[in-house]
Image (cartoon, rainbow, N blue to C red; front, side, top):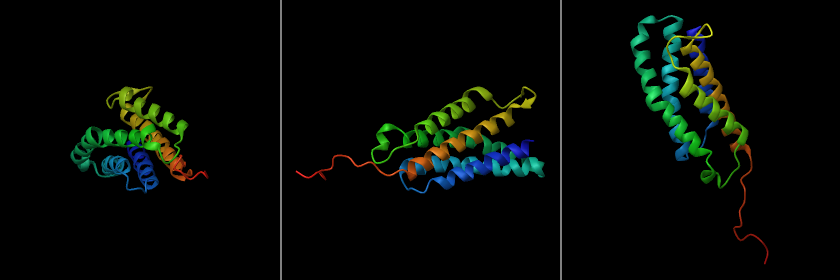
Amino acid sequence: MAALCDALVLVTALWALGRARSLELTALVWRAGLALVVAAAAVGTARYAAAPALAALHGTLSTVAANVGMPLVAAGLLARFSPASRAGHRGSFLGRVLAGVAFTAVALTVGDTGEWHGMLRENVFHVLFAASLVCFGAAYEVARQQPARTGDSGSRAS
């Protein structure tokens, strides 16, 4: 089950990375954080699937992903969808709300030791984190595909 849950995070993180094609600072920040998550998830998948000797490396990468990567993901994505950064485009309000709720639930409530309703908390964490990545990736995609708003830039006829 642990290999499957790590693989789920790996696949959704790679999918979310594919949504961001811009070179804006906010996109670069959250993509850097997500790259750390991808590294930890890839090693975790291999560890739990067939290579228990990767436990120490997985532990180190998971710590870096949790303490550096996830805050970068949160900071970059929340800045990306903040009202101040949306001057030239519209974002997906529902996607941002769902992603924020899922990401906050993962970060604050799940933990990574023990069980929750018969499932290891680490696996619950991975499933909820994958869901939040889908929400963030979808919100990013919606925002990217919507036409840019045009403000009063003097294009009106006098």
